[in-house]
Amino acid sequence: MRIKIVYETLDGKDIILPCHYNYAIQGLIYQTFSPEIAKWLHDVGFLLGKRKFKLFTFSRILEKGKIIVKDNDNKYLNFGRKITFYFSSPIDDIVGNLGERSFREREFSIGKNKVYISQLEILLPPKIEEKVYIKMLSPLTIYSTFLKNGSRIVHFYRPYENEFSKLIEENAKKKLKIVHQNSHDGGSLSIKPYKFSLEKNRKVVIFKNTPIEGWTGVFELSGDPALIAITYEAGLGNKNSEGFGMWEIWREKEESKDAD
Image (tube, rainbow, N blue to C red; front, top):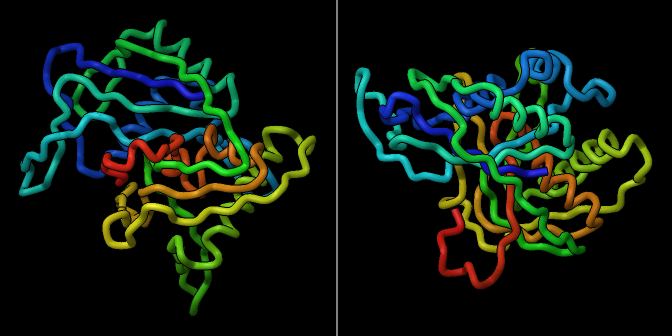
């Protein structure tokens, strides 16, 4: 299930966030959850072997912030008096908990701003076929971790590397297995760039002082519709609960629009 959420300020002041605001939005989401759900997702989540999944994702802020400079030349974004973003999860109870709290609680915090939810809209899911073209609403990242000389090395894959599609498929199958509790054996899933530039669509997001390399643009997804659908709700690739991997259906008529 996917929803569109609008937060507005209570005091009429502008919402000012760091340029790398994913951590702030994640904190706002956890704050909007009930304390019980927030603690369970943060500490436990959905387990599959040694892996832990949150099974939710969110988009970038839809409004375009105005860059301002403050605090020793650090750059921030001024979004005015409201921010809007999409939130999605294949677990209806997670979305329902967030929605219920949005009506029960009248005040949340993000940065130094006190905000409230002024609008919440449930979005109808798109028709998923065996091949769809998708536009990333938040960067797509997939990576592997290695040990080299005793040090932990993280390698973020580029869309043209062979492992990129393979690892995204494996990740999607794990999410599908958790949600459907082994009732779906899972087919295949492949992804390849469609309208894409390594230079233009490369995005580095700083999350809790850690740089994460991701990719925006338009991609072709093909394979089992069930696998495609789970990535629509839970996100493609890794770090979905940190604001990575959300997408929407892209159509050729949107070609004139910016696909970053």
